[in-house]
Structure formats: structure tokens, C-alpha cells
Image 1: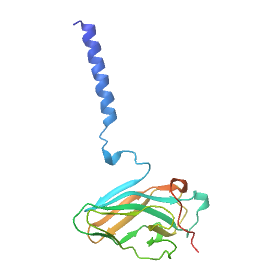
Image 2: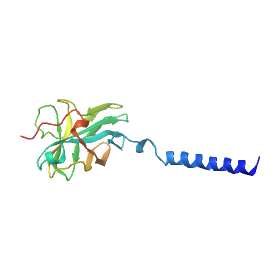
Image 3: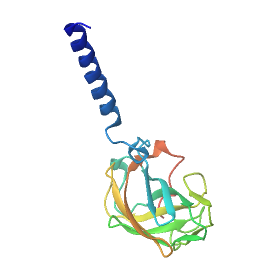
Image 4: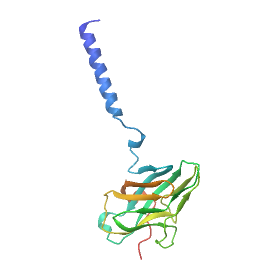
Length: 173
């Protein structure tokens, strides 16, 4: 084989290695684009597709409530409980079901190897940030979730536009 041909093969091999290496760049499933949604895990309890839906920043005001949506997945053989969530960006985080008042304490039981959806949808149960302190726009919000059976987990949750979901919680009265 000629020197030119060997040089060309070496060059092409180097280009292929660089191209493949750039594609992988250490990205695993946890780093894949999830459409702006966040996942996390504490103990055997997974929090999947966590996000907040909000109107545009200029339509928000201090004191508004914003929906916090997620799916809970229990990877264990015993019931897991989510019994609290908090953030410095709102007065409180509560559980809301349908038209019930937004002052319900959080207590969500996830059966062994089961799933509980707290995703958006008309009159579906979800979590809610009550009394936001300032308009949030699209700034991600740190929220800490508490489980007496699994521990605590803080996630940086994206604030997405309402059109990304099925709707928002009822306005605060």
C-alpha cells in the first residue's frame, strides 16, 4: 500500500474516531433531551417528567399559584410515600385534587412496583406552588421533595409555558 493511501486511511480513521467520540461525549439516558422535563430518584422512589407550567412572565404576579406536575414510580417491594415538598419561591407546595382547596397536605402513597400520575389534566390531582413570591418566567425552580420512606431530593425544575401542558390550576381566589 502506498504512503499516500496509508495517510488517507489514517486520516479517515481519525476523523471517524473524532466524529463518534463527539456523538457519545459521555451522554447516557440521564442526559438525553427530555423535552425540558426533569427526572430524579431518592431511594426506591423515582420522580419522572417533573415540571411546572406557567403563563408568560408578564401575566404572572406575586401570590399566584402554579401547577407542579410529575409521575411517581416505586421501584421497591414496599409502599413509598411522598409527604412533602417545598421551595423558597412560594409560600407552600400543596396537593390539589380537582376543585378542592389548594391547602391540602401532601400525602401520596405509591404501591410496591406501582406508579402514581400527578400530571396535568382537567381535574386531575397534582401538586401546586401556592403564593409564588415573584413572577418566574422560564427560570428553573429548586424544589425539595420529602419521603419518610426514601429520604429527600432537591430538583431544579423547569418552568414551561402553559401551551406545553393541558392547562393550569384554577386562579387563586
